[in-house]
Length: 332
Image 1 (cartoon, one colour):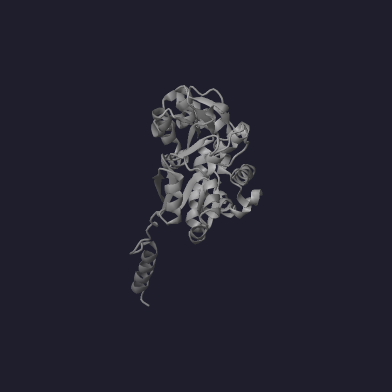
Image 2 (tube, rainbow, N blue to C red):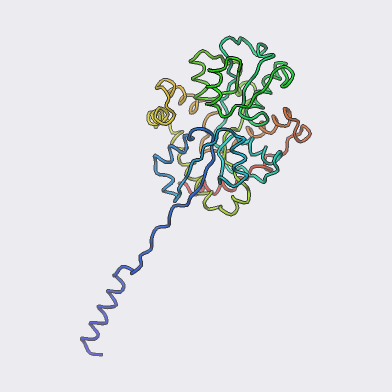
């Protein structure tokens, strides 16, 4: 080979290494996931958006709001959503009542619900003969209310009437507009707003029932298996958002989020922060699933609704920790 041709061949080899590919690899498009929630956007989702966490994990998250848990459960069963964030007793109800193969994959929040009543109501006994409103009559917070009233000698259908009326914000509006709706289970910030407006608190879940696993993530089991990587990425983004939310150094920013996103007055936003992030039953550290609290969920369903012949099954029937563990391993 002549010196000139050797030089040319060397130059071309180097150029081939240094030159960009004719078809450069493009970053993968964000994966779409539809999350069903009740009215309003959960604070974890707001934080994840603001912090860019969905983008970090390659996600395009659509938050689909529903007016009631009945509507939400029906949509999840019909495939009109991928995963739900809702009181996890709804997942149990889907399995036991609708015979849907649903699995809970992560926690999120405990319960700070209170039995809130009209200003003229002085005691639980005053609710005898009255109408109480709930989201759905046979799940989650309605069961909390039935238990609290039963502890005070009142039986549903005999001593008081239950009327389905949708999600928490709707129930507070209904109680303002219809004085014959004597009471309902409400949690922050609705319960805080109600008390500022003169409604009265007759009992709390924390005092009457104890730890309670409220809102958590669940999906059809087959969807979770087929979309494992997508699901784990979503859970990782939410865990990271919840870490930010539960970091006390971010208090001022979180109160600002509550004012902007939930349209709360500054004093209510500050009070809601204190309730949700400094007291039992609020946002869980790392969105951990509370097995003790879930045990109470199952116990309540067994006792109040007579499910399973009155004997609650093992939590593992409904909860699969492997998705959460995989998500947690993705975080530093």
